Amino acid sequence: MASSNTPVKTDPETIMLEIKTHLRERAGDNAIIGPDTNITRDLGLDSLAIMDFIFDLEDSFDISIPMERIAEVQTLSDLTKTIAVLQKEAA
Image (cartoon, rainbow, N blue to C red):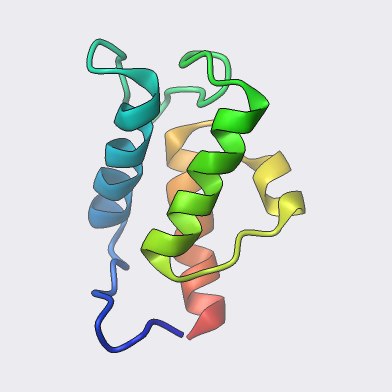
């Protein structure tokens, strides 16, 4: 599903680094972001910021993230696993 000019980011470490980059843009440089960080509770992102974040991830990873999948995600680690699964499903 990835276009030829979009690098594929499939390994968990690369996925997590990309997610952290997008979270840092919203949560600020002082936010502590690790695998167990609860994206909404620990980073204080409101629903609009979360949706913008999800749209950015969809563009970055060239996938669609269904709303029911988002509801299951709490931590950065959860999101990394979800994106990896969605990439495999899209392949």
